[in-house]
Image (cartoon, rainbow, N blue to C red):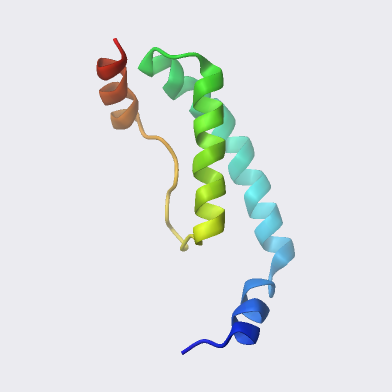
Length: 84
């Protein structure tokens, strides 16, 4: 069982690398969100807002290395068919 002090220490142990990784992912996510929202046939702002919401939920609930929390082309195509 993980104690709260150990969890907090592990969570903040590599804050610089975590912030840098977050910036890189955010910059890579912008064109992806815009592209997939256009593919789905919705306003690009909708894609940006949805990507921001997914990122916030992933940050709060805790992600894992190698976990991808974003839209995919298959999701964009399927949701585009539902929107129209």
